[in-house]
Length: 137
Image (cartoon, rainbow, N blue to C red):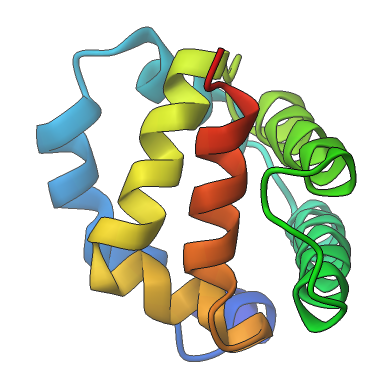
């Protein structure tokens, strides 16, 4: 995509700013290679669909938070499953182990937290807790 189209889809967030770090951390993995292969062909419409899907998942989680629903409950687990399916559908096969690792990053890396929390204050911590609870067994 051109820089102009990327701004339309991602706003102020520029994914290219994180490419070198992502490649250094995960470039050796099958998941990274699969994600790079898939996303190379995505159009502006694909990225918009990805955004709508994740926004819908985030909105559901924000509703649960607002209602005081525990992150380790069945409703949150359902949205965690949708979240993992979303990643698998669009990027790479997101195993429960990979998903658990992502959940840890959502609460430990402030960059992830700030981005996720744009959908609702505290969402990154809630999502992280819900993911951890989902795979606690």
